[in-house]
Image (cartoon, rainbow, N blue to C red; front, top):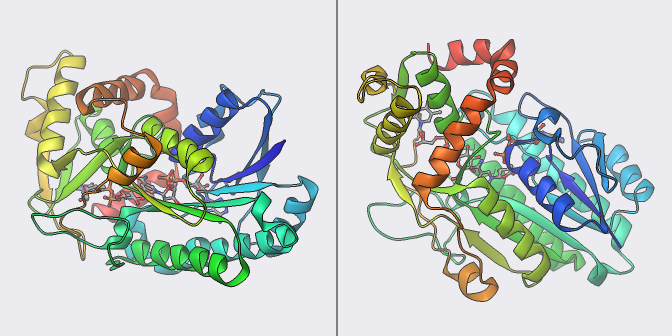
Length: 348
Ligand code: NAD
Ligand code: DAU
């Protein structure tokens, strides 16, 4: 019997991980711990909230006493840690909140795991979900391997790199059973519209300018979010303790190309003339310290665990656009109130 604490389960990736575990493992108890920040939304889980093996707990990973009590109260056997501040632009305007959640919050969880599991570390797993951004920025060639040196370039990636180092330090120092994965850019349903694709989808729908940073030449490697959740499942169950796995889509796109493709897909879906939406593309001031290229070499997880992406990108993009068009209420809810203040400040 496992009682798995999933942190950040009301967020974008976390909600897909919670759903997959609830559906695939009815004999596990899933405890979703989330502070419900602007990025957390219980609507993401409305389809599974009544499941017998699911419990939601509202709380902050930075509250050490609360976490320690939760570990005891729910007899937590394993942790899959996704809770984080996750948006690079916000880390540029408010770095300290990233240090707080991503570094201090992670160390609190590690301390709680050590306190609760110290008599039997080998029976428990602390799985830390991280990002490819810790490796820094690539030039035109090359890929991030699990052995690539860390070289974070933004306050967000520096805070994630720090949390990765703490997780590995706790394995070395205390003997905690850890697993780490570093994934490339996710896209799909339920992503908050501060990130490139949902922001563009929302703006295309509303005939608003499509703000592309700099010249749009930066490159990202895109993976459908459910494929990331499948990778997390494989690593949690089959990955070697102490190991790191890189997860990616083998799917690199220049920002300007991906925005043009999205415009084409949405012109069709919205019965507009081909080219109508692309007229709204607007090149805006570049992101400070903007990493040029990310590309993951996912050979290890493919060879060792048999994981590979299940969806072609074009198919995943269509599914994503369909989801946003069919879930107007979700989009309206998350873009009301504070979102507008953020948007006005970011894109002034
Ligand atoms: P998200 O911003 O959509 O969700 C983060 C969740 O964490 C939210 O539900 C939020 O309420 C919760 N949270 C924030 N602070 C908290 C706190 N102090 N206590 C408890 N809960 C808190 O993020 P996401 O895009 O789903 O990313 C999830 C994880 O995956 C993060 O660790 C991120 O670094 C990592 N990651 C993301 C991507 C990506 O492309 N989005 C890629 C690789 C790795
Ligand atoms: O690589 C994994 C990372 O991917 C995750 O760890 C992060 O949590 C996630 O936010 C994402 O980071 P990026 O900075 O790559 O994603 P974002 O969607 O913010 O931006 C993607 C690219 O698009 C990037 O080069 C910046 C650019 N961009 C973004 C926005 C929001 C624009 O040109 N215009 C925009 O309005």
